[in-house]
Image (cartoon, rainbow, N blue to C red; front, top):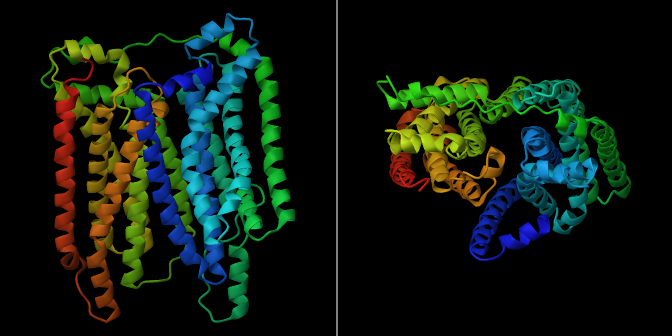
Length: 539
């Protein structure tokens, strides 16, 4: 059935969609690869510590991927294993419940993990090519596969156990337990790492060697460290270490699969039969349209209530909160001894770029699908006196408020820690807020252009061609915005190195004006076409 569906996708008009889909993936893949290839090539030229920093980039990236996979599989698992419309038909056939379970297991892993593969493969290929060994990407495919299976199996084991003892389990409750599990794992990971980036302020070679030895340490208890050691053993032609770490990864995935098999064989069919799907109480009520001075205010109130009640909305913020804990904790363990304006400015801009990237990623997951998730109630909007542009404005305003709070919180905490300079921190907060507003408008407008009312899973909505185009455009905007500040920043650095003290805001004044003007043009363009397009949605 899956193969026939895939075959039908290549027929007729779907061929063009597939071409657009593939083109966007290749553009994203190439851009990610070129960026990380330059980073790894630069680090390769730094003796001793360059290889260590490259390893930490790989290790930390897959540490983040692990939790993204854990939550992504958890979010989609309830709808896949219990709420899918085809389950009623499948359970009415002679097919065994375990065959149905494994069919849904493959669906859940694929839809929750394919985006991670697209993000991980260019990073790995860039690392291998920095050693002039890109062909090693072929044997690396197998470790990636087993790495992906571990968080997928863990999240579904949590689902089955909780569903067995609580038939009315919701995504919100499942996410809470995954959050507790993730917090414990992050705490253990931080506590079991002996290094704290404490650079010795000494010319003593013994102190420097001790620092490098502690920095070179790889945690033996976590899959992301095993994966990095697999890559390192391949580029160093160390077959023994490769087999050791690869077998460890395989054994853990097999162990989690055995537990999953035992739990699913005992409880999946029982939990499906006892599943009590709650009636969908509509969040939109008549009083939102009657006795109200403002339709926009009522829509904002409705969005706030849905955000609180619906895990598909706030679960993305939960993921961000976990990453924020890990990020801030890492900064707190990193004493920064440099006070030169050169490094202060560089680190603050890099931090702003990182926060903007995370913001763009999260916006794709909860701003882009916002209109599509109105599927059960969209007819109420169309039959009411509500103007379509009011609905569009409510989505944009609501998400701008949420993302701006996140940007202010993260940039203020992190940049104060990194720079201890109020002027640079205020500047990066201004840049971050403007980027956040534009990113929300881009995602909200693309969500109108590529609205999908036949899907209720936000992860699947964001995984379509429209989501990929949105991601590419958002990252392109972030890159251009930060490049605008490159020339004045270089000028500022040159003056500082010459001993000339200048006001930072005076140097970047023109660039800031250009950046604001550039962002306003994009904002007005997408707002205009978003409002125009939403009038015809649903017709």
